[in-house]
Image (cartoon, rainbow, N blue to C red; front, side, top):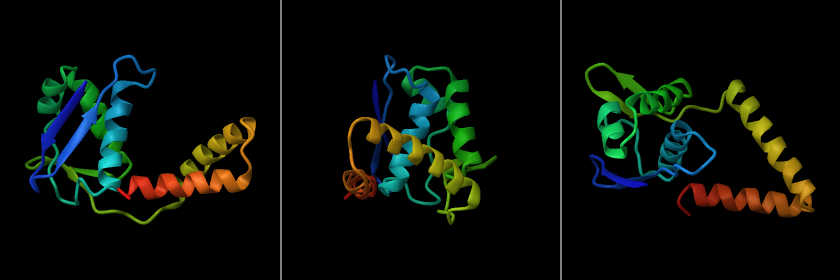
Length: 137
């Protein structure tokens, strides 16, 4: 399922949900919003759809969207305001908790690369390319 929504700046963010994926829907929503932030499709202060509107548009339970928004808020990617709803947050410097969690994910990815015969140079090159693509490059 693919949903486009128009944001205040006129840029469209595409949220793609794969109901056949082993990844839970709330994680897919979270990941798509983080990708949108990295690619500057969402800018700080820009409003996101309400939990209920996004759930209705996707045809899913609003608790699923609420869980995704809660994760994003806890991680500092969005801010919640009772009057304005959810909005993209200002980018925060990488803190110790973030770096620790990121390191764990990279270690696992590096181990998988080793298991598939990639050397350190190939892995580093792939990481650099993925970083560039995430910024929209």
